[in-house]
Image (cartoon, rainbow, N blue to C red; front, side, top):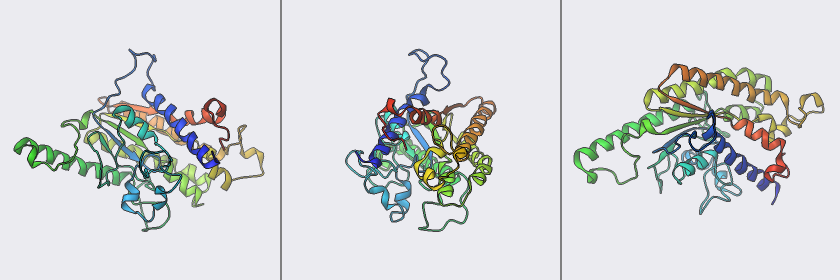
Length: 326
């Protein structure tokens, strides 16, 4: 297996363990009686390329054409997966765990199954509101979190309209497509996994220095908070908020920001100043979730600690059959 495939395999491994952690996070005793009920009628997801299952390529097929090329989708059944992974993303593991189905994108027009939820995430979509977007220009889209929330709001309007016609005139009056169970919007799980796009690509394209990236963290988390509050104001009563992996451990940024100064690296060889962006983001995000719990006492908020799972694999790669974590 070549290096690219090995790196992709590590994605599968940490995604599986991460999702096991997500469903048990903050549960006092990990036994059958203590575990929460993780069966939801539907899952709705929001974020960027770490969650998008096909929205960006549907909107901009030329700009995101590479997502249908090897190694992307290499291990996904039957067809190119429209994901920036050779197999399943974390949202897929979550959705397959709940219903055994993919999380189909909002913009999918053929062979989609939306009975168990919809994916509104967009590769290239920023957490902060998009400004100055240029068509076919780099890895970006105008579909920032505020746009994704508006998509969801429009989705619910159409959904309620179909329910009305179905109840008023019978099944024959409804467009023949799969729909979530009626009255399931406030019983479903809402997953928010955002922020990576903004930091990573502005660092990658040298639009931000690590110091400037750190300065933007409060604004990025505030945008995520605004989107979550909007979802709660609509229908969300159970929200899973996932934190970010360590940016200073990602191979491309390790290459771009390589240094001869050993003080810039930690004992594992990762960039301290870039990892500080991730840890600061995650700390503010954790505080934000705590504040949301206090503000919306009728809503359950889960905090998915993907960061520590990722670190655990990098520190003990042999435990996961990862031979070259970098």
